Image (cartoon, rainbow, N blue to C red; front, side):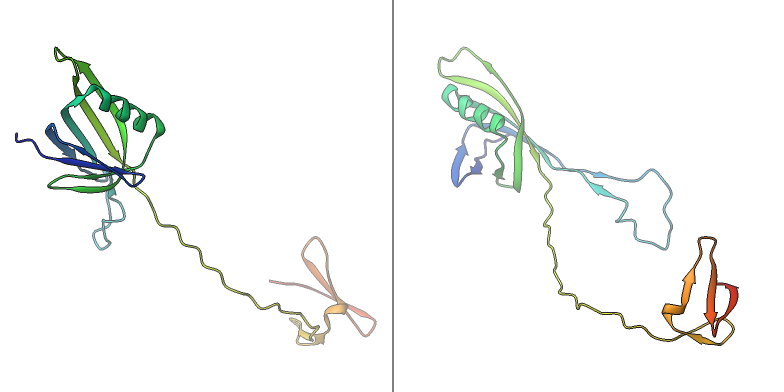
Length: 171
């Protein structure tokens, strides 16, 4: 596979990885294993997994320190290659081995996409409403004011009308 230039951007710093020998991508969907109704869209049941990018490269030993620091700081990076751009990734794994060269290492860098959501909040002013006592009509058709109406704990409403008592269930 031909070498392609890879660019990582973090904190407005642009780093070009020039000695990448292989780039592989994993981009998948999680498809449900349960039945779904035929008349409804299935897209609500399918989950997009984060993109994973694996880079095999030769890097200077000094650059390993930078990559280790980025991984440990959990920095969000922007990944750019000839075929793909992934806006928000983090270094999920860094494996390297020192070879026979004095100043270079073989390294495998794994990047994992961080799926982000844009959160918006809405605010709406509410009117303050004041309640005024009104006459209400009971089940028997007579009217009473709220001050004359009391509710007992067993759900029976007692209405006091002209000194008498009327009992009934509210339903």
